Image (tube, rainbow, N blue to C red; front, top):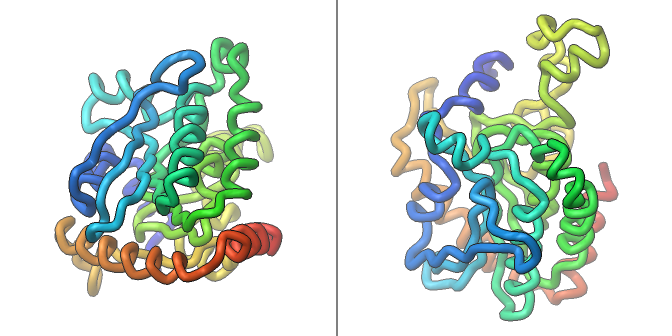
Length: 260
């Protein structure tokens, strides 16, 4: 089992594949959509339609960058309200056209500045949770880096939730946890162990359903191999979920989260 600190470092690395890179790696013909039809477009969330093994799907992801310039443009993957409202718009569109949904999550959390509060960040996250709970199409959420707080959960209420091996998912950052509980952010390593935020911890707690391995015998796998496996597993699971009726999909998803 990997050290928690090692996993956190890997999850936050700017060299990790981004949401758009993963979408292009496992899907064909990706067409990106923009805007929430209320305020504007948020580059921190990308989304659109694509083909996964010739299956039309809606894909949505929180987007970070590989350098400072792109990260500033993407707001370091921390969405504003219009980002979540764009995601909601795409989810409702997917339901209208009976397309499965796949989300790719890599965010330390929603962006909570004054402008976001003025535009209703809390309401946008709450609406996203409500919409996801009632979707009548298959929905798989995948953590591909950081998964922080309600900003991550707002795209993660899937029929299944998966994590890549070197990712994290928690109610807040270890630094924030240590600052609140012990008034000392320097105890973040200690906090991380208490928080149970690694894929192994969360799989044992039944919070997630699958871990996509990024190493084999402690040796890093090629990104192409990981993406090929992810594509194969996603395609198979979505086809399996499509056998359920809309009512069964809703019931399964809601039961899954009530079990928390």
